[in-house]
Amino acid sequence: MAASSAYSSRTFSPARPGTAAARLRRWFVPVASALAFCAHAHTPYLLPTTFDPNPGETIGVEASFAEKFFIPEVFFGATPFAITQPDGTSLPFGDVRQFKLRTIAEQKLPAARGTYRLSTGPRLGAIFRSWEHNGKVQVARDPKQPMPEGARLVSHYQSLSVSEAYVTVGAPTREATKPSCRGLEIVPATHPSDVVSGEKFDFTVTFDGMPLADQKVDVYRSAMDLTNEHSADSVKTDAQGNVSYTPARPGIYLALIRHRAKAPAGAAAPDYGYNYTLTFRVQAP
Image (cartoon, rainbow, N blue to C red; front, side):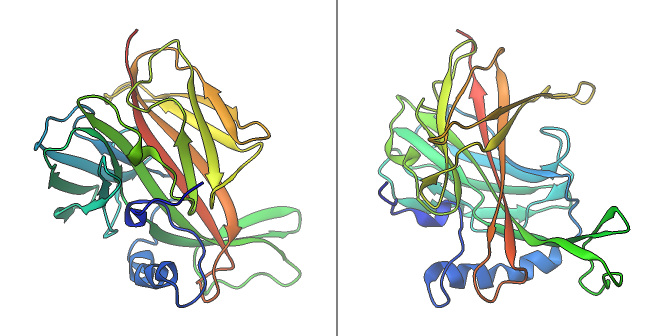
């Protein structure tokens, strides 16, 4: 897979010290400490104001963490929100505002027609440790909390979240859907602007450009109101990292992937817990 030139709007992966990616990681450490209160059960998302913008229209996105989609609970934070344009180049969101429950970003699109990839950029979050003691597993986010004597460390990682969505002006194009080959990604085979209920949505799950076999993918359909719960499905990738998911009904969906991998040297924890979500619209036949 060839890496995209618009890396700044893509996912983030472990990097060697001194590289651009490593410098990005260090830049996000203050965000991690500021947002460490975010509950582990919360899932990140990015929701655009429209999936069919007009040329030159100002597009907005809402980014937050939630347990019910898409009802914001914890703001996303100061990450490099960016847009991959139809020619593959990157455009930053010019206006980003932080609120208690959500982060809002807006940007006037250029006149170019085609598909745009919207991304939160990478967000380092809370650090988690878990250990087993006397047959029970305890989870802690306080780095000063000592492990009991005789306990066995089960996991120690820092969350790293990226959320994305695609919107299309006019006819769909493919340049913005190309993988960055960095970090955790959903690489769509079916164009994400052409997903139809009752038909297959084919995509590949990759990490640093390599397919992830037997990887769980949770897919949620939003009720888009305050009274009903979202519906949920769970699928797994095949040996080549591929998934064929058939949405039963039209609506707004979110696909979630969680993956654990080694963190780069100098990171706040030995592992990163990657969270990647893709918000997509399913249209009626």
